[in-house]
Image (cartoon, rainbow, N blue to C red; front, side, top):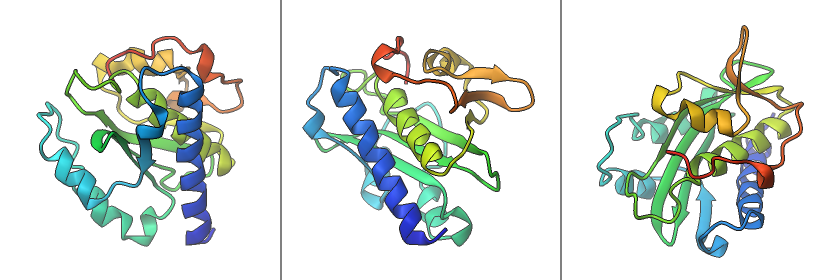
Length: 183
């Protein structure tokens, strides 16, 4: 697949996620919500977060420049010019799985996007995986405290695969519960 095709799929996947959350009656203005690429501006805002995790987000800028990471999906969630969350997902060398390697929300509990970062990012990853004709979205090494968030989003422990979302199952984000979980 060519670089332009990957780029187009990534943009469509992000746009679809914003559209789905807008349809879900979120408590914030969807027009103020932007899902874009992780850029230096995103990393600059991230560096001011008081995060208890260190996922090494600054590495994403270098990774994106490498041909091996061309299929990877990077997501910066912005609301009202504030970085609300980040996500990095990649098929690695798989032909049937996209792995969510990192997903983090801004730890500011006053942001109206709290509880919506995981649904937004996971929806974008599911959309992207579907566009790539993948079968599963897999959470790589989930943090135990947020495992229930993934389960509420339709992920299941699948033998031989891990904590995964089976893309062949029906998915209706409007019916999901647990939107207001930790991430």
